[in-house]
Image 1 (tube, rainbow, N blue to C red):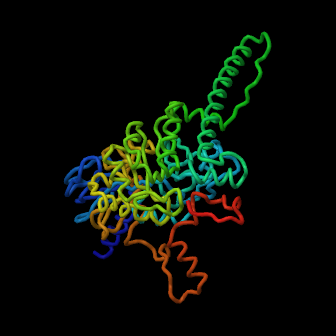
Image 2 (image 1 turned 30 degrees about the horizontal axis):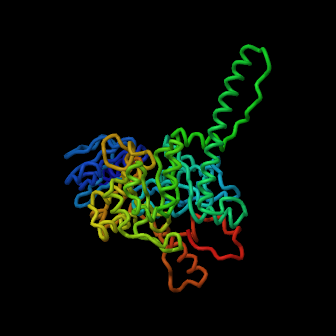
Image 3 (image 1 turned 180 degrees about the vertical axis):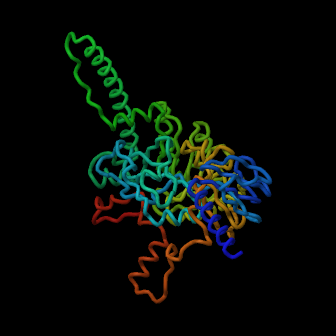
Length: 464
């Protein structure tokens, strides 16, 4: 009898491991917070081969698929952070105000322990971006937090291309103050964008005319060969922005500069853009809605330097009530671990509905990244990126119990090894304890301006 039980246990273990490898799991009897279809009590969700295939009651697990009993628990889609520097290798290429050709593709550290902590907070996808040193920085990467995967393994396949712009103090400090070149003022930031868009338009026209003439010449082998127009990767990226092939995410704070960029984008036909930070966006909420612009903001973080002195904890609520698609982001390795609490502040301050608050960390950032057809809600056909909570995701008392990405379990509170946790031991020496505290704080000193402070040696610098 004992031998039979051991055999069954071994078989069950093998089956479970196989299911884990294939990204298949049946989660039963949960209160499913779908985001797009309300909350469904006592509901099962079947994920097969990484995709949500069925949502309903009394579902049976196919052969080899593990069953998780989530009775009394809540199931939500994974949280998406639209603004993160979580695992960058380097953040700013700050020696030119426009560096559209560089990308975060080569700057992904898949081994950063912060990834695991973010998963433990229910975050499953991030938008990894450059900093804010440049008016037009570099191209971002949309990642799934598949902790333990390679650089390529973390990338969200076929996610739309994105790029980071930056307005205001940071690019003017880095270039006008730090390098002695434009932009030195806010109005020169607009000048940089316009002159580079004009260059991109000229380049595209000249390049296409050259390629057409070259094709004709190569075919006929007669006449004078056309004068080459060399390929320019920076201008090609800028041209793609104008053509709508790249989503713009722009670091910004003040209402005047937000209006400025919308005017510029209207002049060049640029659509589908998101203002990041956007502390004064509430002042121009109707204009944002009219232009179809999105915002991704902090819940209640401001006044850490002069240009962000003016904001309000009602920012998200005002934007939401004016019809602006808004998300709550972290821009922090610490805040990313409890974005559910951050978006809960919109309920406390502005009486935003629970449904709309949860959208700000799920489907809304997915829309801003162009991945809403795959993640951001629990719907059949979407990716199996889900989180099991001990209580309602908005509750301050709720804990993440399990996190799945593509149907594979990446975090389990009950299996969390002790070495994944960091605690400050009163018996530690000062240096070790300080190191631990810095990690727990989770935020590098001014992540958006990382790699740039060498330009300001001997001067004071403020955060962000």
